Length: 310
Image 1 (spheres, helix red, strand yellow):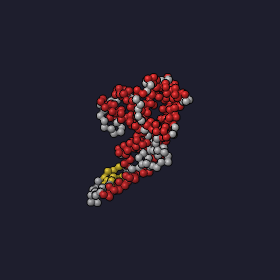
Image 2 (cartoon, helix red, strand yellow; image 1 turned 90 degrees about the horizontal axis):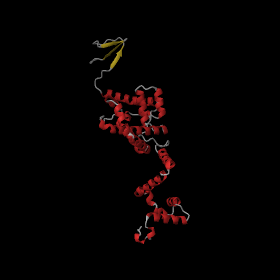
Image 3 (cartoon, rainbow, N blue to C red; image 1 turned 135 degrees about the horizontal axis):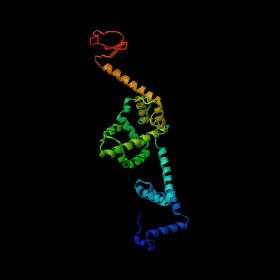
Image 4 (spheres, rainbow, N blue to C red; image 1 turned 90 degrees about the vertical axis):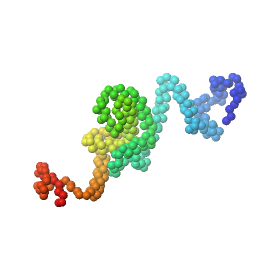
């Protein structure tokens, strides 16, 4: 589209406000307001109109479109508290729509990254690689919008907690806090980095909890937590509370997972025994002395081993 020569523009229309008022008067003469004109410009399906608004939604035109949106926000928010509330409510409704649309649907096939069956859990499920894959899937496919939202909120509050945490935590406690196997140094220079990692972990956990509550098959973190809680002797009542919060699977699911892990351990032991050479297993025989008398008495039983050559 060729640009007009500034000298061809009438002198009374060369300033920006003069052009705006002139366009306003023209729209008013044909029963249009700026809002009606913009709505018609964005919604009309006529080919000529469609061509002229094509750049508004194109990637190359996004920067200018965002500038328009930013100025609309400024106009709305300049109308006091009510204007700010109106804009916040609008953004909140948009955010609700995006968050609701994220995550797997109930009819989707099991994707094998964050969806697991307790009956087929393998030892590799607890490996760092498997956990990293679940986290990566959550931040890029599962709940990227919610993750970035929480991550931004937590990241902005890092500086507010630096002094408080540094006073409360002793050097001995710092080594115990690193529950996720991080090997970051715990000196004053690393405080921000540690809290950065903490913010990421909290955001990932919150997204995983939300996904599990919405769809119980999205259970990667919860299944790992349930097995860990069972192995650590946590009571079923506490586990039920964590299950209600979306932090862990049920105790029944954890027992099923342990049974699956037990089958893998059994096969591993069988394989080791078959491939081993001489085997001297521990045995318990009541009141039987061996050839060399090598045994220890415990209550009413004798514990010993088969000597070489038996």
